Image 1: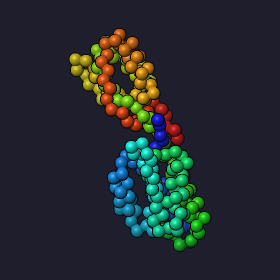
Image 2 (image 1 turned 180 degrees about the horizontal axis):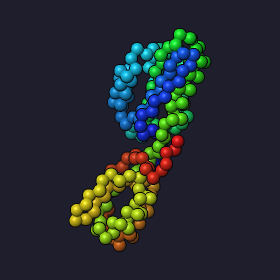
Image 3 (image 1 turned 120 degrees about the horizontal axis):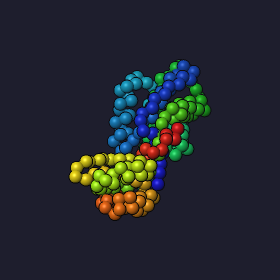
Image 4 (image 1 turned 120 degrees about the vertical axis):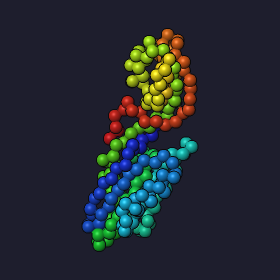
Length: 214
């Protein structure tokens, strides 16, 4: 299982008929991040006319979605923004578009286009990453096998969570669940059966061997 998201906050601004549309994209990890993020935006951009938002958050295997027009005509801001996130298959992300009214009415069609364009412009600048459902594993092995294993691990693991150097080397690494069986067999082979493998928790992590998707 995989999904796409962003790894850091992205901010882009466009001007349409003297109205400022500032789109802020931010990663989400939990529901509390939604309110925290919205409060921060209101403080950073005071006296704006609208703070429209949309988010998609993965929780317990389901996707929670919500959007708001924040005073714009119904369906002209929040829903088009949510549609952009959905069409791009993005999760654990919130988009907030701040509007400073420039004095010219855009009409419903113009508003839909403006909010869609604002969000898409920010997405074009954002770093999109792939999160993979992975298994965390603790490896304990002798130093004599560490160099051999390190070369293999560099190309197969998603992330190194921790390394401890004591009498033996202890590594905590994340491996894509679909590659787990092959990974364990390879570790046992490269260490001549001496490496200890302990299975820990599962979760989604960024595959750092991949380049940014955009």
